Length: 262
Length: 290
Image (cartoon, rainbow over all chains, first blue to last red; front, side, top):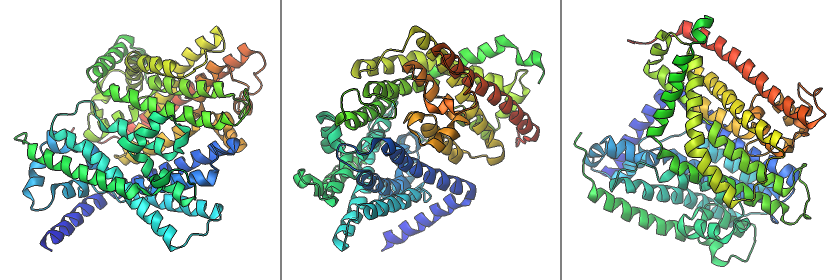
């Protein structure tokens, strides 16, 4: 209970900091919304002359894109600190302060720099999914919508875990090149039907950096596309295993941490 | 602006080579950039492969065959690796930390130094980023040769003009930092606008009619669509034909000239506009404790 109270107090302080700059808040909201609309607009522009893609209709692709946007929006609320972890906390020495507080260092890193405006992407993603479901005339009940909710949460957590594993690399050596950007750039691969890619890319997005599980594999289950077997519903399992791996990497990293002394 | 000040060439050469050397110090940053560009080209390559897979050989989508589409995508990204820059971010940082006051005290124009430095960055990017990216992409994907030697030469000129156009667009976005201070949101909006409207992700010829008409009156298509169309010799596209210079179009040579003229007009227009905006901004600038 005490830990929870500290979390809430910390979280409120940090929200106050973010809300102090109204202009930035609004600009971030607009930019996020425009980014979401741009992804959507690209799919619409692409499909207008094309018609269909490897047996996938526009609304089916929109379901994948919408799910992926919902997850990404949730992840983006905490993503800044994961991307900047090495610079902000290790090199600039902010991690000492984090360790002094009697609550989980990982939770603190996630909460600091929490961004609310990026949830606009989740909102747009939800609208896209609703539109796709209506367009495909799918008659979904509680089970399907619960599966959507589970998929979105697992997808967001999967992004968090993948990037926290990369962030914990910074505990061991100063990352001059940046390992996160190339992994970040793999996200668009996961927004398209995986069968259009050759097997090495499919394997990469399935077993190594499993962004395929954020939206594509769950979508095949939602659309009743068979042939992928258990992969279609394996997202929670993949997320759990990456969660374990992320926790292990973080713990090893914290144990290794030596302050810069500043 | 006094012309003698604006034409102080050796000073601008200093900014040009200074920026080149500054970038050189950070060259390892570009290693991961190569991976990013490869991911983009790979994604669009397989997307278009899938689109054409159940069409007859030689079929066209909006006037492009598969080979042309792959070439368009690859060349667009290779060109972007050279013309891209972050002038807007750099100006915003200078406004935020007050070092923009130094620019005012220099006996040369800010606009001139920004363009010179951006060209220096362009040269760096061409040598250390575009060449390796281009080599990897040309090895991995079936990229078509330019339509003719004339088109190849025009493509190179066009890329240089793209760079100057983008630099000025970024300069204008950077000027927003005077009233707004933080322009992260504006910069991201510009990023998405350019990604779509420049024709980087999709050729403008695939847009619906209203968007093509809109694009032909905006500078963005002159950044990516024009150079890539020059490489392909694909200049019949309805986008320029509906635009302001539709009367000048018949022979291939004329089409090439028209494409470059469109870019030159945008350079001139944006340069004048940037100058006006900068002079207004400089007059109102307040640097705290500067």
